[in-house]
Length: 213
Image 1 (tube, one colour):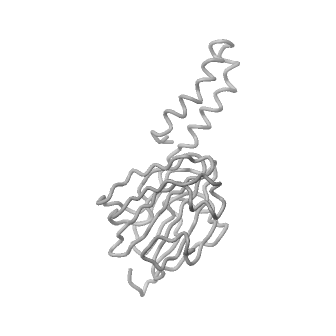
Image 2 (cartoon, rainbow, N blue to C red; image 1 turned 60 degrees about the vertical axis):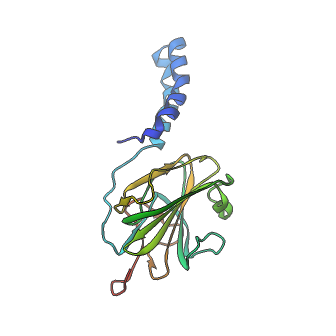
Image 3 (cartoon, rainbow, N blue to C red; image 1 turned 90 degrees about the vertical axis):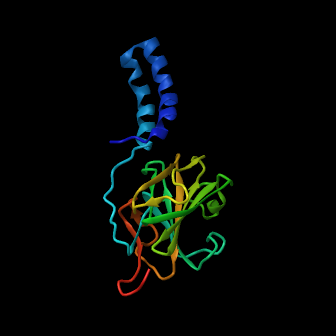
């Protein structure tokens, strides 16, 4: 399985104790110490996903569990609403590669410093975050990467003006976090709270077949 390049410094640091143990006690003694760098590398795993390119669908940008799905909370919503909101919590065991929820053009990438509250708390929307705005056939969809207690950095690899396909890799968050997706109220949510979702594959929302984007 592919491992994201962001893993390199963390794996090297995690492997240092194993190297010391190997030098002092031999290979057999060092085996347990190798579990830490292996677990660290697994956190940065980057599996391939089969993302639908149906323009009526909004895909999950992350693996995890739905914390909230419904009308956007006023204090959390971006400007320019009204919106529907889906909030996803990522545990340290989930894949942390993030993906684009829709195809289209990246219009904005905004970084906002903030706190480092546990990502499963509602107040974590004030945490450090990166907000990505997409123009999807003339409709705006917003994805927000939010760090948590352990996740101390968001990595967004998209730039304004870039054209993307739905389900494309957009970056990652390091060690536990949350993602929010905001869609216009003309969409219909397809997920419920506590549901497990898969980045790039689970449908979060869709526009009605007889409606318009």
